[in-house]
Amino acid sequence: MNTDFELNYDFVSPRRVVFGWGKRRDVGILGRTLGKRAFVILGSRQLEARGMFDEVLRWLRQEGIEAVPAGMITREPLVEDVDERVAFLREREPHAGDFVVAVGGGSAIDVAKAAAALATNVQGDSVKDYLEGVGSGLVLEHPPLPVLAMPTTAGTGSEATKNAVISSFDPPFKKSLRADSMMPSIVLIDPELSTSLPREVTARTGMDAITQLIESYVTRVAKPIPRALALQGLALAGEALPEAFHDPSSRNGREQMAHAAFLSGLALANSGLGMAHGVAAALGVHAKVPHGLACAVMLPVAMRTNLEERWSEMADVGTALTRRTWPTRVAAAHAAVEFVEGLLDTLELPRTLSALGVTAEQIPALVHDSHGNSMNGNPRELADDELAELLAGML
Ligand SMILES: [Zn+2]
Image (cartoon, helix red, strand yellow):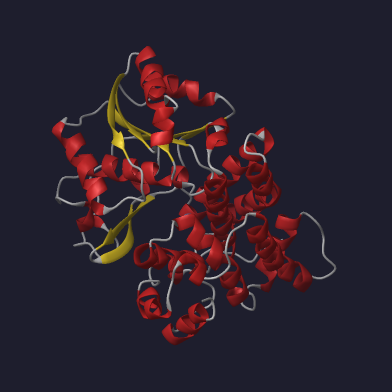
């Protein structure tokens, strides 16, 4: 295993993590340690149809918590989605003893984290003022309301990150609201919640987790604890993702993917990402490609691009994903890329940008908007014309 890193780091994580099949029923007991009034944000209509909203409200109320339904988010969050939730919270005069519960995928958890932050930080009217790169430079001066995150997909790891990704189509951007204080206080992971995910959502959210594990492992700013976590996540996800895809009710597959996704969140929050995530943000804004799908398509190309800069790390990735030893480190590194390409085929995911509806005319805009926090961590620095050529080769 590669041990070429500096022992000089800062590691942030949720204060408490509770993981287990069926553990969702503990939301009230855990919530009680955070406060007396809970604003509950739900992530999908399917969850509502299955009675999740009512159940979570009931479990909270059973423990004497005033549970307030605070809306549903059914798409990757736009500026207005966050602003609406913030207005809702501010109207109810948030105070000490309030907290936010998010039940859903990365979108719901990101909205909850952003709304919890801006409920107590009222310097700006819109979340846009606080976003990296496009905002007016406002920062969070006060601690956010505590967040209890209950992920229902196994992908983004948003339950373990300190940022919320917010998009806009006009003007086009996909940027983060980021602060250490935005890390959820409590994470409650019940892998059983992911058994009803459609196959294609299992595939693309799972590939998001794998992309995060790989990119945080090889990134320029990799740190020791995330590296250790990433290898465990990869060793589980390589087998578990196809299992969850082929057999949605597989307890083993769902448990291991939920754990791997959580680890991917911790890893990215404390290290960083790379080129696949950089381009994925641009694909989200300009071609409306769902985040996980964009990551999946970009991952093999990003790995090949970084192979020469990161032989040794990529060999670790290959060994972890394939769970076998290779005659040479170079063979293990190549095995990493081949494994990921094979995984895309197994998961019935595309390999080209044209399959995502991208056209040659969009490439300059994609290149322009691929830069940012993620791309800065990419091992190999890519000039604009080099990136344009790479993307054109993927049409
Ligand atoms: Zn991601």
